[in-house]
Amino acid sequence: MPEVASQTFDLVAREVNATLAEARGALETYVEQPDNATLLERCAKDLHQVQGVLRVLEIYGAALLAEEMEHVAQYLLATHSERKSQAESLDALMR
Image (cartoon, rainbow, N blue to C red):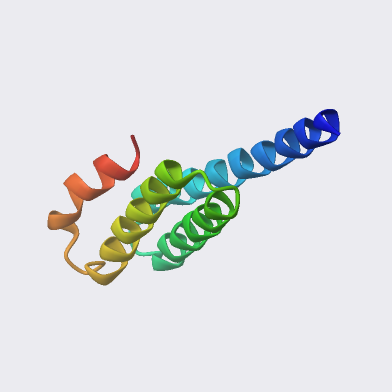
């Protein structure tokens, strides 16, 4: 049984990493194409999905971090027209 649990966890970890890579890719593309707010929506959606998975797995610290990152992405979406104020938030989210 522990081997099955380990394999399942490895599979979930790979999917979480892939989703985080997609979120980062959307954010990096947004930096290059700041008029495309859909990219920020995608980033926030991916972060929300990761947060949910981490909560189900009871990895609360990482889930909290993903939640805060999602909030930053939503803030960027809300301030989409004010690009000058986004620099620090974009920098923090890309770390």
